[in-house]
Image: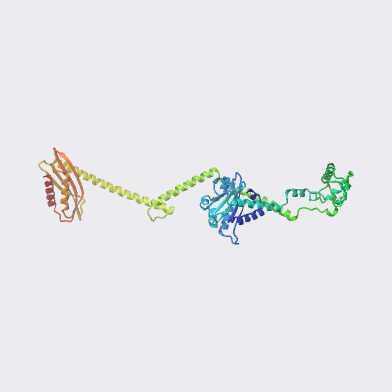
Length: 490
């Protein structure tokens, strides 16, 4: 798979189009790896299958996605297959949605309708293929077949290395003078092709060149080339006659052949091939410069350790502040505004109202405590009165009016004490039954106790009564209560 990253732009574009048609892909991305300190993936090339002239939203998102930079250490896609050395990784919709590197990438997948993504990891980077359905064939095998076919096609288009090297070192290249110039130093007769019917004796009489003669001729030719002036110099005369050839041995054969004047033209590299090589060189250095700039931008934009700590602490502070505002919103009454300024103002007003309510409740609590203490003192007064009463009085009934009575209702305190052997529960039951028989009268509270006075058991009952209306006979009510208590005592 690494050979795809080594192709030139033209062959790589044609190969990506062929791969998209063969594998039924929506898009293909080539992510090239930049080693540390960058340690990231950059888009080397990409192709999106869209035939319309007007670019769609998915195409625009794809272009933005190609400009992104993905760090390998974060464990996201792309980069997961390259990091873990996975040659083939296939992800479904529910898998790659939680592994995307950014929001633009996820939005592109949704807009293009991608259901399956295949990542092919290799040493040079990672290959990403997106599809709208599940693949029905072995994609890795198909890709290897396509790469083999592309390599064979490129080998047929380009000349072999041996032929190109021989062509560049031939005497026909512009780096060397024409062979007619060399022939002035090494002259040899042009051998005519032998006829097949020539007698074997004539063939045997032909003197073949030896290794020593070839070495001597080659040395003389090289010395002549090195000592001759440059072809590009304009000051050198162009029509000088060739120098006289040095005396050589009478050998009839040599490694060089005569070069006629008609074939003295220099055959160089075609102009079209020169132009293609120049464009490829310019494109190579342009891409190299762009990658260096991207690496510098990545290094400049990468935050330092202090900045990372500051960013983490700032993020935690914002999260804690947002959580506190959320708690405040939940404590405020319904209908309050949800923005932060309104939350703060509503919280201030709500706290002020709670403080005023607390002050009022404290005052009421103090009033209730004072009333309760007054009732306890009254109960103790009843006990003292009952204890100090004469032993001859078996039943004692007292009715006192409370100071909190109004014109609409009266509040009375009924105190009953019974000396002797009797049951306190029966006494309370009889008294309550008598109160139910009375009209416009209701029982508010009831207190009772039992004490010993001079070896005699004394039961005390105190009731707070509410009387509505003016038609109430205090003396008759007191007499009725005394009669009920006396019946219970006997």
